[in-house]
Length: 136
Image 1 (tube, rainbow, N blue to C red):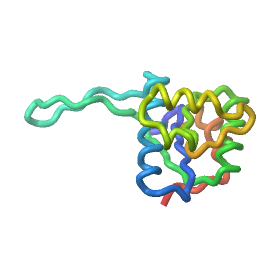
Image 2: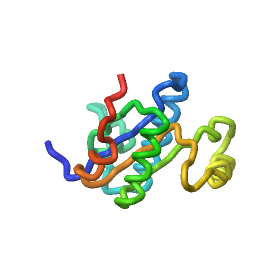
Image 3: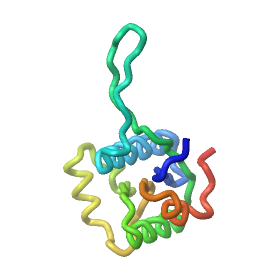
Image 4: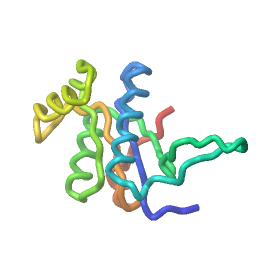
């Protein structure tokens, strides 16, 4: 199945594994919250147990270095893509209110990004992630 939109998550490749997983989970939840149309239907197993809906389209996870994250972020801003961002200072907080405070304190021209999620038209997301390799 081919989708008109694409979801890409870029994660700084030299983070600890727990940090990569944490960043990816937070960013995916950001896209799900910002783009309800990206959500699939709830799941149900053969016994009738209900499970939460998940993103209904593929999510590609890319490895990136800080300059690549910044380039993708700038393109996403210019092109109006749906985006979620995770900055390094968020690792030092313990809750959402603190996360938002350290995020707001970031430089608006070059935040210290360790992760970025994008959703939008396939071609636009491809332009923002050009040169990125899928995360190993």
